[in-house]
Each structure stands twice: as C-alpha cells, then as structure tokens.
Image 1 (spheres, rainbow, N blue to C red):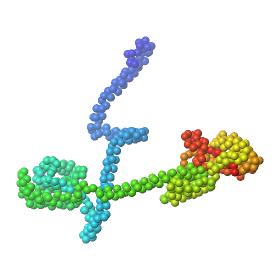
Image 2: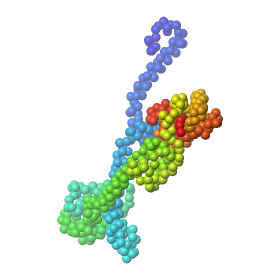
Image 3: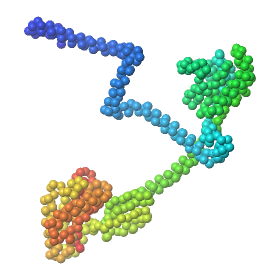
Image 4: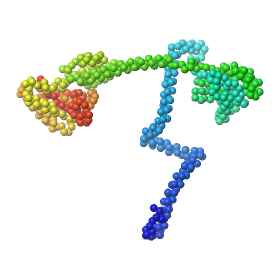
Length: 516
C-alpha cells in the first residue's frame, strides 16, 4: 500500500513525526521495486560489458560454477548424467569401434607374421647388417602412401608442378600450393621462428603433409598413413636434383611451368606406396574368431545341457521321499553333494539312472536320517491300534510350535502350546504301554526359505533339539522314543511361501507319530 492510499483519518491519528517517517518508509519501498526492475533490465548488458576486458565475469564465475556442479551431482547425479549422455555415449561408441578395428588388424597381422618366413628373414637381416631387429621390423611394418607431390616456387608461392599417385587432385592445385605456403608462413610468424627455421610437418586426420625447403623451391608431399624416416630423405634428394638441373629456370621464373613439367622424373621417386594390398580382409583373424565362436558355442550347448540335467537330478532327489539334498558345491569336474538319506528310501543309483545322470561326476557325502515320510500314522490303520490312540496322534500332528527368524528360540506365545504337547505325548505313550503297541514320535524341525543349504539344516536341527530337551525334562521315562531331526526346507509346512505368515509357519517344529 502506498502512502497516498492510507485513509486521512488514520494519518490524522499519527503525530507529525510519525507521518513523516511513514512517508519516507513508503518511498523507500516503492524505490526498491523500481531498482529491482531496473537491475533486471541492465544486468545482461552489464555482464556482456564486464566480460570484455580479460574475461573477468567468466573468471569470477569459475568457482561458483564448479560448486554448483558439485552440488548438483550430490543432490541428483541422474540429471547431470542424462545431460552428458549424448556426448559420452557417442565418444564411447567411437572408442569401441576403433578398438575393435585395431584389434582385428593387430590379430590378423600377428597371424600373418607368426606362420610366415618374414620374421625369420628379418632376424637374418639383423644379424647380417648389424641393424637392431626392432628397427627392421618397424621399417617393414610401417604402412603409408604418398598421394600427391607438389613443387612450389619459394618466392611467388606458385605451383611449378604437381604429380599424384592416381594422376588426380581433389581441387585446384595452384590454390592448394598458395594456401600451403600461407599456412607455413602463418605458423612460422605465430611461433616467432628464426629465419632458418621452418615448418616441416602438418598433420590433419589420417593425412600428413611433409615439407622440405630449398633456396628457390619448396617440395611438399601429402601422405596417408604412418611415415618412416626414409621419405624425408627421398624428398630432400629430389629437391636438390631440381635445384641442380633447373637452377636457371628457378632463378628467372616468370610463370612458365613447361621446363618443370618436362623434368617430372625428378619428383617420381617421392611417390612411394607401402600400403600393401588395399582393402585386404583379415582372413586369418576371421577364421580364428569363427573357429573360437564355433568351439565356444558347442561348449555352451554342452554346459547348458549339463546344467539342465543337474538341476533336474537335484529336483528329483528333493522330491524323492526320504532324501534331502543338504548342500551342493560346484567343482572343476562335477559337483559335491551332501545328501540326507533315510535307509528306507529309493537308491540314489536308481534315481540317477532314471534321469540319465552319470554319478561319476558327483562326489556324494551321504548321511543317515529318519525321514518323516516313513512315519505316517496311517501305518496303524487296520492293525488293531486303538482308535483313541489314533485320535490323539492326529491331534498331536496338528500342533505347530513357532520360532523366531534364523533362531532356535521360541516365539513368546508358545509355552502354553508346549504344555498341551507334553500332555498329549504322555497320553499316547501311556496308551501304547497299556495296549502293547510300539510307538515313536519324531520331532521335526523346519526352516523357511527357498534354498536348502547347511544353514537351513542347522537352524532346523537347533529347533528340533530345543523341543526335544524340553520334552525330555517332562517325559524322562519315554526319552528313548523321542527322535529329534532337522529337515531344513524339506517337507515344509507350507509348500509355497507367498507371504510372511507362510514363512512363519515354516519356522517351526511339527510332530510325526510312528507305530511299529
């Protein structure tokens, strides 16, 4: 609200000093808005003006920009990586393509030289001449091709003569000669080189321009590939021959290039081609890689088939009543299996034969245990066992004692259930004694999870042992008829664990009643 918008009756209620202070305050607030708008208009121009003398704005913003980037990475690195992805992705793609191309070339060259007489011939040449072996290898391995040779008049920068490997040139050779001379002079001036010093090499992409200076003429060669030390010597010899044979024509040159064209043979030694056969395919590398691909493909199929048979064999063992695979370990030539087997179960040899498995690939560590699959109470059906005992047995097998995760400790609410279990077992043993029926009770420890390993077996055994020790205290007369065992994730209470409630039921101890 501006000062002029304040009602007069409210202003009259203030003292003169207060009204004066209020007016000053209102004016400052209005001026602040005007200043912000004005700064917003002139700020871009001020930044541009401040940047011109010695890049002061850019230099002052370096530290702030670095901190801003660091803060951005710490807060959300995904944004910066997304912004840089197009650049980094392209660079990585180019690097991989170049690496693969170089690898193929190097592999093919190695294969060619490995089984050829070149390497032996180079060794013999090194022994005969005394030249180091690596120098001979480099001399014979460096590949290059001189595409064009240009003879340029030094004083006028005009082209005297031009020859090429394929008798062509991509553009006006006179313009190229002038530009080459201009570039050479520019570099010389920029680097403040002395009078006798000059530029001898200009590189661009896969091409290199070699330059040799003479008193009256300049010789330039456009080379594709890696140049060796021999080419500059050839160029210098050709340039000296031109100065000797055409000294008068060079000194009096006024635009007539006829004499230089007639002496083209002086420049021909500079047209060197050491590239070898063009577009030569890496045959050896392709054959080797194809062979390796076939071999590894066959090995991959065999390994996949072997793994599939192995997984089927393990699954079949775990499905077999009275057999549990406690652990398995991959070894160099097969597997080591630790198997819990009830003596009443089917032979592992027979199971392996039915699955087409070669047991020579397995180191079997067999441990005996009493399986709950062979303790079903229906063995007593039709054998004269009192119905009362059958009912008590069924009731006992309905009890489940729950434990904490990965522990042999009861959950808090299990003591009352344990007391009921003790009473049921005592009744069953009492009736079995009265009726002369042999009975055993298995205390079966279970574990939750999906992998049968040593840890799951150990936890289940701890749970069964915990219940056995408590029952032994109350049923000391019948402790020989109590059989604790741990089955890990074998014979689970809930076959397929879908939620925490299912896992809770499998962290438990159950009971099986066996009538002999």
